Length: 249
Image 1 (cartoon, rainbow, N blue to C red):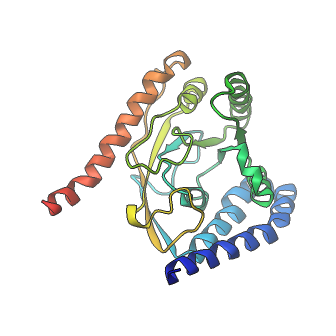
Image 2 (cartoon, rainbow, N blue to C red):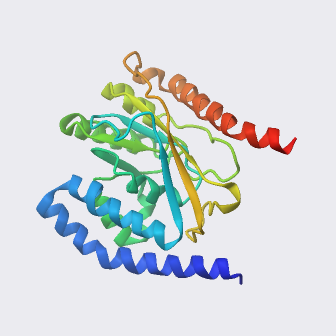
């Protein structure tokens, strides 16, 4: 076993202990100070600690910083287990998250997600359950004015490129009338842990792309919007790859 692998395993063990020990504090902060104090305060700090334990640094490239504090729908590519911690560390203003119910396999982590205000989803095959879950989430977001993050790919795509997009995020954006903010997470392929939770030293660049106006969107045309936004991600990915391709030539 390589030293790099051993370091990654030690960092994973420390992360499990850290999150488990901290989970009661998340509950206390949620009860006393509210959801945003958890998500943008304690949660962002804890995520940054987890990233540092594994030697992961984060650079944000955005047209405007800090990001606006209003209701928007954030969407990103999803290639790695790192993404979860990177996104929470960003302190996205007012943001809630969507996450698979499978997160409950690690109860302390799922408890943290509950305190952050996460909406838990079910697999695509449960069409009616998903419809009800998204409708309930939409109702909450309308009431609170919160922003929300979703991964349209729905799972970690480790084959390279941008995977197919599900319609949920685009149906939600249309129903809310909220602008969409694409976020491209750039992780060096050789250092990307993919579906493994054993992270290694690397640098993640977060590219916040121009906001997309959704005022003309309708829920029934969600597929069209999903394909269009996926094209934006693919074009940006190709733009990033172009200098490397020229250098290789």
